[in-house]
Length: 549
Image (cartoon, rainbow, N blue to C red; front, side, top):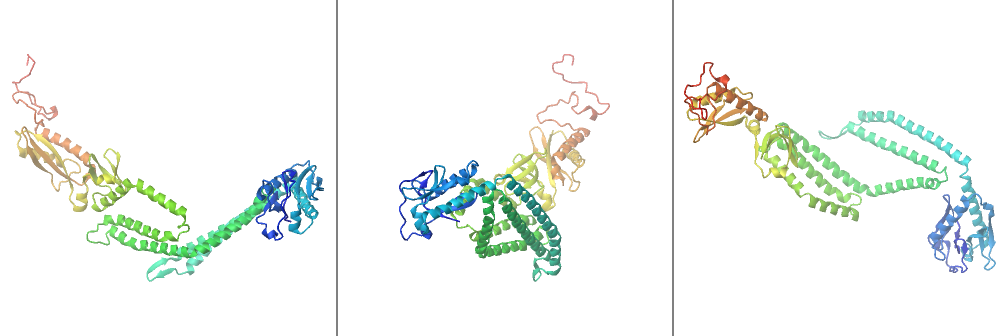
């Protein structure tokens, strides 16, 4: 029973000045919002009037705390609550000992069109019943029954969920197989939009979603039942199922309201998906060489597809955003402005690198696994992204270079000549020898050294160029072809070794341009193992600083 009381008592003391009488037109419907007086989750009555310094809400909370203190004190008996009539104004009050709990005023009698005593007796009965119910709910035998019921409910819930999962695990695959075998799929001419397998998978996902809803509903009923068994959680249990059902109702209504926009978003998504699915085979064919366009290289296919994919998705997002829930809300607009400012302030270098990456793709400066030289960095290209390029040097050091920096640097590619023009890389090295050596002999020795080097091609054959005629020597440039540009440091090392060996075998001394040798009697500068076995130092020689020379 809900009572609307215009109490004139605040705290445990009674106000001496009663509230003004309500107008004749005042009814329960015109009192405004009522605030409940609650004990252990049960509403005893409602308060619609404030009094003194307290408004109606504050007074309802004060009465609730007051009654709860009496209920929690086992030394106080509900039977000690009595009604006492104030002889000054004939207003009945519910008292405990000498303390006033509440007073029924003449205004309450006018509102209910009942006597003050009758309203006070009804309120006293409600308070006594609530206190007894409060204490019974906290007795040991009552709590034990609640624990037993909780255990039984938990077991039943476990069995139900296990049965649902067991049966659905056998029924759902059978339904999917039936759909695949009976449904022909959705095709437009020769283009298959939805295959029977995809339709079966969609139905399977819908069934799984419905199964999840059933399990969640069972869990909600279980929690409601268990929480209502104990006094400390009874109020939450009373509201749990109602809140859950109200939430589902709200979600269902919002979905129904949003269905037209959702349909538009679904159409935009479907068109975007199938446009991407349609153009992908063309770029795959170009990449594999099955489809050719003049001036469009196969290595452009994949990056071009990703750029188009990004643009198409961005366009679809722009078209779909106005139909998303909350798009016009100030919060969404504020976040959009914040992200835009953040992106514009912090992405200058990122945009520069992305632009550089795109330019590098279409200038075809290098590809993955190419051997390139950028400044003082030489090595294999192991990764090429829109932001950076990574190079592995011959010493297995990984160098990361921003793409924006590559646009302002000369890139030397050692691999592109053979890959695109079928012309192997030419390795060049220079040696300086004296004018006293016949240049034809030098050419023959250097070519022989190049041919002995591993990974140097015999066809085309190595050749030697006389790069310059210096003051003290002639610069001979060795040119040798190789089809292993990634091994050029090793090839260079072996070539230099063979040049030393072949020059020594031919009796050619490799001297510095500023090195002077007196051929009158000095010992040869070649290693001993290359000199003839009967070689002897000439009899005449100059030995500076040695009086016995």
